[in-house]
Image (cartoon, rainbow, N blue to C red; front, side, top):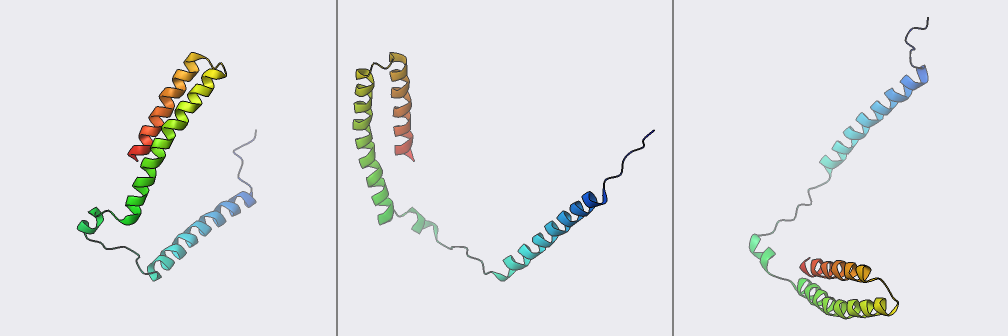
Length: 107
């Protein structure tokens, strides 16, 4: 009758080496992070509320795309109808593409 089998020596060795490597990596990472200076950005709350030129440009581009997207969406729907796409599929696309545009504009 066979008793419980002991793991092979190589398996035990691999597990121990893996554990040691994990501990060493954790210690090394901690030491490196203690040397590197903190890169925290300190700002006051008022400066975060003032929109920058980059934010204004981004909002403008998003608004411009929202207008163009509506034209593209309507052209696609007309093309779908011309190609004979089923009504259910067109309704689905209309619902999904409209939701995507709204989410894009809100982001």
